Length: 346
Image (cartoon, rainbow, N blue to C red; front, side):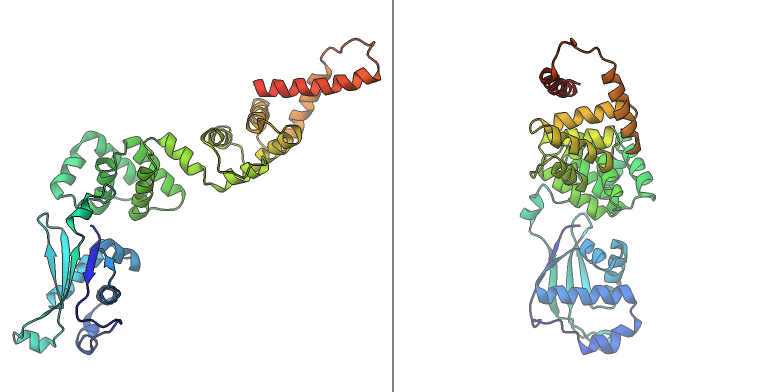
């Protein structure tokens, strides 16, 4: 549901609670009902917009809990609910408080404040979720591809999706234009961060849409730039900037494809910094690829790989024995340069 704006009328600039409410209505209301009504009053006096999902998030209730509380207060004539043509809640009209016996006697209930939806122009925002009808949800669920997508999302979340959650998935596909693969990646991305809440998933999706992300690969590259390990690797290579796309590709390859953690990568970075001031990503990439081919999986494997490399180098044919000490020093330097070029070419 969209944001709802509260229009202030004769309430003073404070969260005042009527004595009638305290005397007559608190005793029979449950926790959720009290919180919802008091929160509405608080938002009225602050002149702030509010939505059903905002209230649900505020008190860790479901949207159904909030709607149930609103209907409770409507039944007791403390407010009236308004609906649009799609039968979605569009406004809440708070009524003047009266004692139950006065209400039963038919005393007029004067309007105090109206809670209405945002102007229609705001609904044109491409990042605002429409109020999808039940028919639209049924059509969405009946499509074979999206039906499979909903099943996959339910497996990730671990429960059957509610109508509100299905609307969110429909919004991602219909309004934001996300592919099935991108929605799949989005849900996995959020779950990896311990977030199952669909409001969080929706916010991440909107941010991706605003950043022009259209594929899982683009999402992975963009989001991975802000992971802590990325900044640690940049720092270890003497870089202080946000990684470029090419640099991000290297880091994703090392961590995701090769499966190396910071313990091994940091050693490769240290050797790179000591060896060259240029093309450091390429140099570190060669080291890590060589280690991967040599079967390096843990830090302790590096010493074994170094020893294997030294033995292989020692077995290579030497140049003429006529070389004097000065030439031998130069030859050692030449061997190092050749090693660097070999690493960069692999």
